[in-house]
Length: 304
Image 1 (cartoon, rainbow, N blue to C red):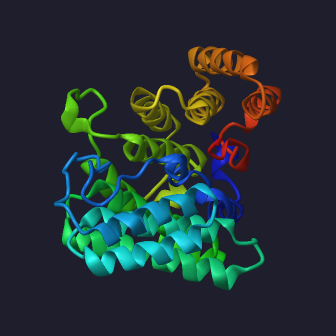
Image 2: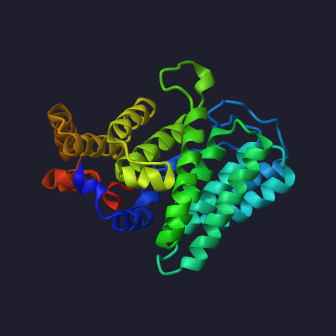
């Protein structure tokens, strides 16, 4: 445990530099639904029909997303919002587009990334104003806030990390129960991504009393494992979520001396070795250095 508690400023830099890697892993691959069609909101609420122009704009936004043209997708969704300002799904999808656009910018373009993440945060929050129970709005608020944390200096990051943690807790409180069943569950890709992102947050955050005293949050590898398992219940085919579970198990083993967790983590990684690239190299890297499992970040970025 002592290894994870010491050198607090080094840990703040670590968290600020890599926290958002798993903020909403898998959100990029989450499907969207056209205005007037079936919603992919976790609540399963279908929006009322809108005009054909908005439907055409949705198609254009989807094409742009599939091509990696996230800024263009955001512009199309802004036009959709002008025609359908009462549909909460349009707000969180716009937040997702801005989040993706910011992620695609070069790391050195800090100003551009900050603008994109601020827009993502703004639209996610506006969606939450329209519907306080919108789980996707909360998820993208967390993701954008976590990305903005990566652009903050260490002192600012320390001041913000508690707020990011509180946002995550609010999101988790409104997330669906993976044990639920039935058509009301809708498409749970976004919920699975939230659980996986939360697992990354609690795995990578230092399990430090000092950090808890300063910010009100601390790492919790056991909780990270539980959250990763929830993600896999909702999206069992996601290889990156399997890697997140393995990382959580190995982190738990390293920090708490849990031999059973180590055995389970290695078993998950050994199973992933047969999946080929890009999964196998990531599994192999984690197998070669299981003691680093609490700190693994970019290596586990969502696989597409």
